[in-house]
Length: 116
Image 1 (tube, rainbow, N blue to C red):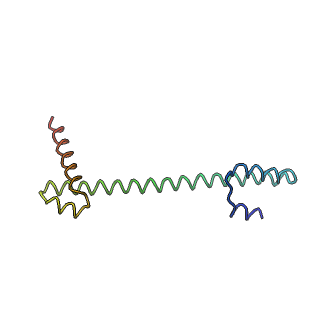
Image 2: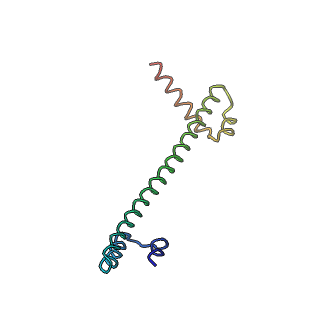
Image 3: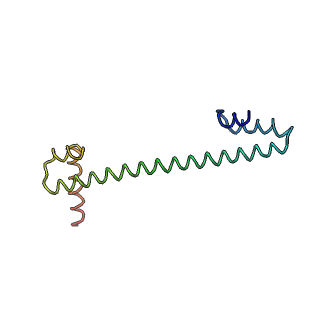
């Protein structure tokens, strides 16, 4: 039954459940109560580890997306510099003409700053 509760059960307050479980087990079986706390600590550590992994994966996905977008913007800037029509750049990169105008303005401002 304990195995089922640990593997399949859901509770809103895990700490209270573990404290309750410990009191129910440790009074009649002191040694088993200590093992319950060890199991609880292991489960907490596993949860922390899984949370960290999920956070890393999410961070990597966000970083990858940002990198892809930056690369696409750079390609669009290169196409603009080569004199390619904005409608073709929009169709090829998915960047709107308004955003292309913004990229072009940003590039021109950076070039002006570099000259000063």
